[in-house]
Length: 145
Figure 1 (tube, rainbow, N blue to C red):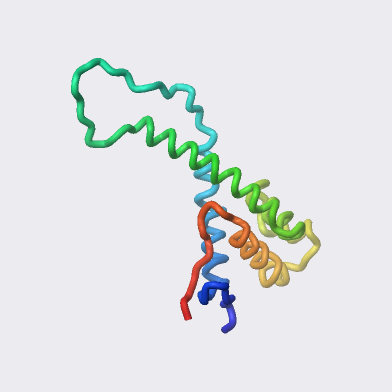
Figure 2 (cartoon, helix red, strand yellow):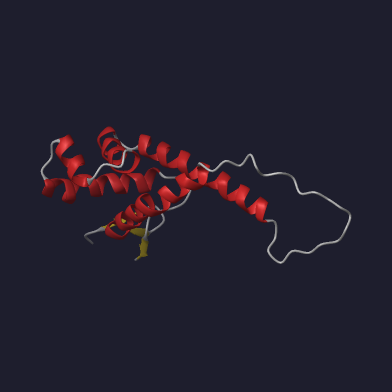
């Protein structure tokens, strides 16, 4: 069962699918969460009550934006925490790629590995470690056997 890893719940982690999911999360979702977390919420005020009944089909948009901002800040904190919880080598790779914005080429040249070894062993291992360490959402992809 190459590419699968048994968990304690009789599910198998699909390593390749999990790596792709983590890459998507760190390349696409995480930058979006960083932008949302960086928004200034000082312009948000409490709703005013004028005594007149009003209905809204869309709910409280201010509340929704505030909740999204709080969640985005949690994601940013948890990503950094999960990267720090990986082993030192994986942490360095993930930091260079996703926190410092370096390219794969810059990363494998700086850590002193050949391109092939980097793509075959180093980066995949770092992505799987991140999936294990990230606790806010489950980024692992499972196959039940």
